Every structure is written in structure tokens, then in C-alpha cells.
Amino acid sequence: MAGLARHIDPEELVHSLHEKPHSHRGKHAGSSASHSVTPYSTRYNSQYELSKFKIPHDGAPADAVHQLLKDELDLDGRPNLNLASFVGTYMEDQAEKLMIENLSKNMSDADEYPAMMDMHARCVSIIAHLWGVQKGEKAIGTATTGSSEAIHLGGLAMKRRWQEKRQAEGKDTSKPNIIMGSNAQVALEKFARYFEVEARILDVSEKSRHRLDPELVKQNIDENTIGIFVILGSTYTGHYEPVEEISKILDEYQQKTGVDIPIHVDAASGGFIAPFTHAKAGGPKWNFELPRVKSINTSGHKFGLVYAGVGWIIWRDESYLPKHLVFELHYLGGTEESYTLNFSRPGAQIIAQYYNLIHLGFTGFRSIMEDALANARLLSKSLEATGWYRCVSDIHRKKGDFEYRKGEKPFEKEGETSADYNAGLPVVAFTLTEDFHKQYPHVKQVAVSNLLRAKQYIIPNYPLPPGEEKTEILRVVVRESMSIDLLDRLIADICAATETLINSDEIDLAAWQPFSNSVEKTHSSAGQKSHNKHKAKRPMSHGVHRSVC
Figure 1 (tube, rainbow, N blue to C red):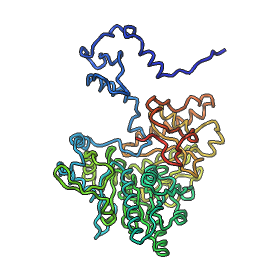
Figure 2: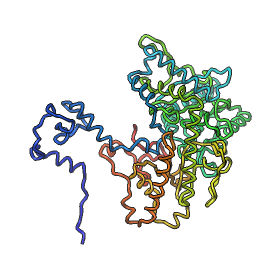
Figure 3: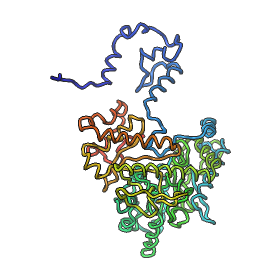
Figure 4: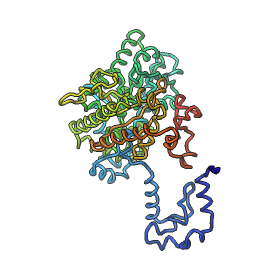
């Protein structure tokens, strides 16, 4: 007969052991850090913890602190196997060297670092040309800390233009609204909440290909709509939203009502993919070639191939950036114009972005993006060939075909490029098939994610947006650093994990659960795991549910 067991709090256990006299914890208890030979021979290896929540009275030796922090960081996942993230984890040695050499440069000190600011201006010009800026227009833009800041700047400019126009006409300005799909990344909803704009979040569906539905846009716009957020690359499934189709709807609405509604394209990922790939955006226009597109943002640290910390926003002409939002700064001997939410911010990423643009050139970027899409197609076709999975993403299907058909031979063409397939991000969103669920009802899809985590892959499992939340997807972002060898191993490991689950029973599966939270995570976040989302104080459908970071 099994005995009773009680829960053990690991934090309390460690704390109680640390409270025992040092003499009970080893014969070297009286050793001093000043006599250490290696970082592990200091008293911080076994006698004292590094302080976690209060600044210590005395410091610790640099080599000991470095080694102990390095060891703790070994608990993190491997960046290259973090297949959940769009953010780049690889840069060439020369680019890293440039960044290290310029780590101390601050973008706010423009007068002190004129060469860096020249590179910033060149990046703005290069990106504006990539996005089809029209002859005669004076594009203007800036680097940001990422797409979130860029989206806020773009949204705020739309709001102020709407307010100024309404005020000039003597109309009410108290009820601005903005349109976006429920697949929108949280930064878009943050803009609406922080800047007091009603967020009209429209359901997406399989019919709308899991992206903003033009028919719902038509039904929800009015004279108080400051603009439409259209996403070039949904983070859920990688689909490009139909910018040109929505633009035509807004053209027709303006002809009927006289109300001019602009588009801001959130091209956080697609802004560095669509300009280079053979597929482009699938045929329709998406950029400044459409007069209704007033601003576009992207993340340099995603498919701009820079480490985290840089985004970009461009307005097609300086007339679309309200003058009173632009500050004239007189600082450290110089005069500069600024429109950012941050002041001090790193300059090294700007230099790295310029390095990538001139080192790779158009053909270099095209080669990288085409390779990423080719690898994503291979992963998609391999998963569907197992019969266990179907892909919700569509980049592996022949252009114009968006339907999964059980057992159908995948489309292939000699000398193929991305232009032969549906356009989109190199994202593979997949789910267990209905047949699999019927045959193996005990297998939970989240267990696949957890088993792969044991292999150090980070592949999230989460529901599609509201309206489609009954469908859970596993999602892999195929970045530049996903080689064909790593891809082969990933496919083999997904198959092995699935077979393990098939051959397990429900009791066995109870072991494959997410890792426990640290005390820091417990106290810093009021969020909930996906299966407890009904307990959240502020669920995702009502706003942000993770800790502010």
C-alpha cells in the first residue's frame, strides 16, 4: 500500500537549509573570496547565495559573478532552437564585431555621433525605396526599438490627422476608433488602449483565411475610424492580409461618403520578405504603390536579420506626420528633430542594419528569404505526408489553392520559386488531423510541444484567435539559421515525439506537463497558462495578460 506524500515547496526547502550554521555545510565554511583560485572556489559556490531581490551590502568578485550568472543562464533555451520566435538569433562575425565596437553609442546623442546618424538616414531611404515610395513624395521615417513602438507612432499620427481634420470641420473628436483583426499582435491593441482609441477587433475565420475579413471591414468603418491596421504576415499562420482589397473598399467608401480612411501596414515580418521574394505579396499591391497606405512599419530584428532592438517606421510623405508631434531638440550642442516614444536607445543595431543592407544587397536578401520559404514548404509537406498533421498555413500549396485534402500528393515543380506558391511568411502552423483525434483520443496536442521541449526545441501550442479558438496549432518560424540538416532532424524528432505519444496511455501522458514557475515568475506575472485562461483577471480578449516587460 502506498504511503501518503506531502507537497514540498522547493523555495522553502532551500531557504531552510541555508539558515543552518555554516559549520554544518562543509569544512571550507570559513574560506574567503579573496583567497579563491577559481570562481568555484569562492564562498559564493556553496556558502552564500548571490543576492536576488535586494542589492547586497558588499559586492562579489567579478569572475565569480560572471561564472554563476553564466551557469544560471544555461537553464535558458538555445536561441537557435527557439522556433517560436520571429526575432533573429544569428549575425555574421563582422556584424557582431561592429555591434560590440559601437555598444556605447546612444541614438539620442545625434550631434556626437554624426556618422551613425548618417547611416540611420541611409537606412530610412533604402527601406522607403524597397516599399515603393512614389516619385515626388518626400518619405520620412525613423528607427525605433521595435515594431511595437513603430505601431504606436503610426497609430498616433493617424489619430492626430483625424483629430485635426475633424476640428477644422467643427466636428466631434471624442470617439475615435481603429479597425484590426483578432489575429493582430498585442502591440496593436496596446496602441488603442494607451492612446484612448476604440479598438474594433474583427473576428477572423477559416473563410477569411485566418486574417482580417474585408467584408467585416466594410461593415465596421464610419466617420470616426482613424485608420485600418492591416498586417503583412499574421503571427498565427503567416498569411498576408489583403491590403489592396481593403484599400479598394476604402476608396469606394470615400466616394460615397467623402470620409477618407488611411491604412497603416504592420509589416513587422513581411516588410523584409515581400520586397525580396519572387512571390512578393502574392500579386496584389501592399505598399506605397497604393495611395491609401500612408505608413508602414517593420522589425529590423526579425527578417531584417539584426539582433533584438531595432524597428522602422516610414511615412510615404512628410505631410502625413503631423508637425506638432515632431519635437525639435536642442541637446548636447546640436538641434535635431525627433518623433519617438523613447529618448536614449542603442545605436549599434542601426549600424548592424546598415551593414546587412549593403553587405547582402537585394540578391543576398532574396536568397535568404527564398531559402527560408523553401525550408518552410519542406517542413509543411513532410508534416502532412505523415497523415497525423494538417497545416493551417498555406505557403506550401500551389498559388491560389488554400484547401487541405487528405492524402493528396503535394504540389511540386522543377525550378520552383516562392512565386509558384501562396505568398506568406516562412511560418508553419500545424494541427493534429480529425482522423488522428478519432484514432488516438488520449493524445493531447500540447504534449507534442512538451516532448519536443525535452529535445530543447521551443515550439508553442496555442489556440487560434477568438472565433477559432477551438483549433489549437503548433507553430514553427523558419528563420535564416534553420539549415536543411537541422530541418531534417526536426522532422524526425516531431515524428518520434508523436509516435511516443501514440504508444503511451493517459496515465503516462500526465508526466508531460509544462515546467514549474520560478519564484520570480510567480511574483512578477499575473498571467495564466492557456488551459487556465478562464481564470485570468484580464484575459487576452480584453487586453494584455502577461507581465509587463
